[in-house]
Length: 233
Ligand SMILES: Cc1cc2nc3c(=O)[nH]c(=O)nc-3n(C[C@H](O)[C@H](O)[C@H](O)COP(=O)(O)OP(=O)(O)OC[C@H]3O[C@@H](n4cnc5c(N)ncnc54)[C@H](O)[C@@H]3O)c2cc1C
Image 1 (cartoon, rainbow, N blue to C red):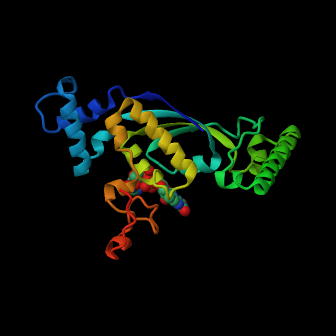
Image 2: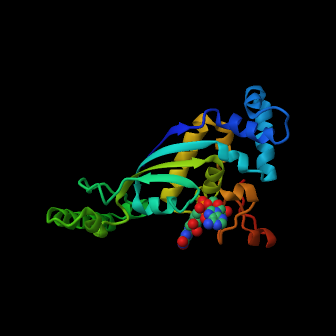
Image 3: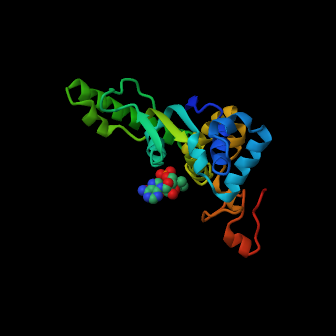
């Protein structure tokens, strides 16, 4: 899996803070953007998050080039509706080379891994046979597994990034999409550390785990009420 942040709103944190400050200032957003100090920006962002005033975060947008995730993962990713996506088409691009993802749980079992590899190779062999026989790639692809690698470009604003990370950095989400959002977070942190620090699993904001079972980071409400703490804070 490869994730690269290729474009983003210049000075994303300053942009968000200036937009937020505009609502209570005589100055224009452009003037505010020039004059806000780093400390003021930090305080403003903290206030917006704690007050739940999240719409100013929509002014900062980030574009990621994502390569080598499985179709199983991209299917989960595109469920996040407040983002823009462009994905390599299996209708127009014939799958010539066999590139696929193997989950670690399968890779760890040598006998199953061999069967898994064999199954994927067989599926690709039939796919190639069908394409060579004139079946359109858009139909031949029906035999390809969810394991097939895909490429996707995603643009998401900071508000939706915080929301998606709250769900997908949770260790109860699937390993591949957790891995993807960890890399997305790392990319954002390089250019907007304050914002990047807000990309956290939901338990950080809640102060507890709202899944059936906790990963151990925070206790569930049931555990808190029952007086059992699994917290590793
Ligand atoms: C661990 C996990 C397991 C999952 N399992 C399943 C599953 O078994 N089956 C399944 O189908 N999905 C599953 N999903 C996907 C999940 O149901 C959501 O579709 C996905 O996480 C997108 O999140 P979202 O709907 O909160 O928001 P996004 O699409 O990211 O939108 C952000 C927010 O905008 C608002 N919003 C967006 N669109 C609308 C709208 N049309 N109307 C009103 N408000 C809107 C909501 O407040 C929403 O939270 C799973 C997700 C996770 C994280």
